[in-house]
Image (cartoon, rainbow, N blue to C red):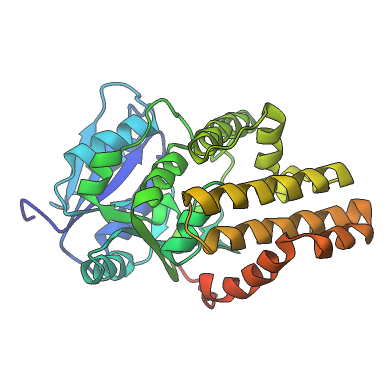
Length: 344
């Protein structure tokens, strides 16, 4: 293996004896050969380390934490140990298509002004069977940056970035969960990011992926990240505003049907975000206004089951309606035609 490979692929591992072999093999069979596979065992108590040590490929480098440090500290350690010009993340329960690295490195080589690139993902079950569920993220840098006040613009397990940029930013180690959301939000604020509109990674759905307790902790940390961005934008808000802002992103997951009071709050809130951002330009325009418009349409859509047709009178009378219609049209280019790729 070269002393300085083009890519470092980082796989942090903690008690993944059932899945880690598939993740490792998906990288060792990549069509792009110039990489090192840096696997960091984060104090596993199962057979994970034994499985990793069974591979004799010289491109694989195993590093073991003396104790469990958690995912953000382990990822930061991997970023510091990386020898590659680019660093690609892969979770230890996920799987990469053989051409993933080749396509991402081609993009970064030909776009020196971009800090990183991700891909769309597909979902599989515990036994690697396709769930025919796909995760699309926005493709363009403006759309990715515009969405960071609401959602993660790229998928971490499918991402590749310039190692120097990752070292400058790093994961917030005080965030045991959602550190990837925080990392990419901060990078997107000052650097171009992109997503390849193709499924090049499979993410595994299993019971231990996110427990109910972890979901509550994720929400608390997301609120902290939202609050930091709102302060930076110059928005004055209450705890109630922050809770309602969180619901804008997760109405379906929370099974939330807005009432008329929420609709009226959402209109004022989204108009305030638009007005302030047009003055300070923290988020790219007109992409940010289109994102706000899509959320306005989403609020009215979900409210219609609870409030009825009267909510559409609010929709059409609002100044946000133009942004909503522009946002729908922009979605055609923001999310390119979606390949139904299911084979493993």
